[in-house]
Length: 509
Image 1: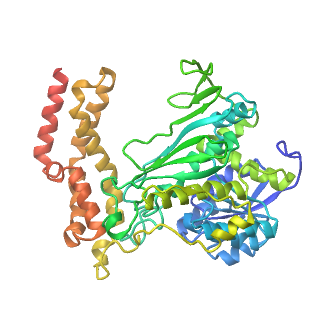
Image 2 (image 1 turned 30 degrees about the vertical axis):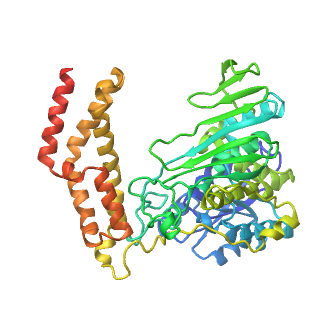
Image 3 (image 1 turned 120 degrees about the horizontal axis):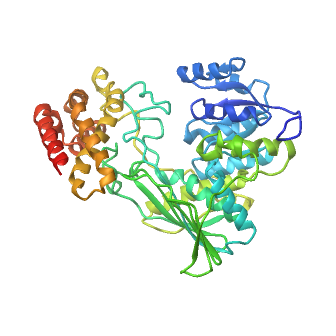
């Protein structure tokens, strides 16, 4: 008998999308799950999967994959394709655990909901952020009435990826190299709202009902972009803030903040009528039902299975989402992220982006539990207008030149971060607290020693920008050059002397 589920029944799982999907292999072994098949069109990901699961069936053909004899599919393919692939798997007779988000358009959401209903198969959304030990403890307290009614919450997923996005999830540059990542190169962050809104929904049991958002027109420097929302209608990608205000089913308000910015953060604050909580920089509860509340620092713990959860990714969340999926298949008990809650959280992002495009007009978040509501959105194929990530250079480009865009940018990005970190830390050195000054000195030394590599990396990119200065790729390169003070850092000897002089001066203080 299994020590977790008290049954010998096994779940045979196929993983569709072996980048993110492979992260679940270790946890699966503990949860009555045997990974028996994998599907991906990236050869290196297939090879890595075969190393972890040597006895599994492996293919790059999705039809051949779904024809195999297994019980469930983990869908971890490209984000905009999740609904299409989940529907195909359900119709092939498989239970589905889908990575976020559940679908890309309201019409896809209607089809997905009705496919789950028609097939009777288990569908779960793999939203993991509610299942950190802190958020699971908050959910327990909320169910017990500790907080009273939720009045307001602020949850964030402020997570800046590389801009421009020129690599696969495994860190390898795009092939061919003249393009951006298939969806990370253009997706607006409102779509990716589940990691911040999801915890509030699971903690409180509330659903989002209305949303309002304003457009963000200031992008991070070096983001590949169109001519501007008001010129060509192209909405920002992951290199911009995406804040929204969401009205919940009890009348409370959630400020939901996503974005790729200059300061990553995952701040979480929950206010109730009786008590409040904040999770960063440390987990604190505020009790006393008043503004001058008594603060309590808390060390949250999982009630059970914590040792196994701690081994999984995303603070244990990867373990718990797989646990609930397996538990529903084996026992029939509904998991936190069924198809309806998956639709709620996904639609909150879609409707927020629509609100932003409409200059802040409030939008309903439809409840797809109701057929009459679904009927209103059955043919609603609205989606973000975006750049074509495969066409950031002219059609008549010389691929011998532009094909180096992704590899050259991937090589230069760490150096670009180093340049700005060192130069900006130097500017505030006099006011830096003493124990952190050594970090600034180390940054400056690292920059000094990296100047030859910086020159080589920047001249490699400059060849592309000089050839195609008006292209989206060329403009992104030039923006990064301006950010990194190209002339200053590529004059290697002068910059080296400048940095050495600063180091001598800093040691003298």
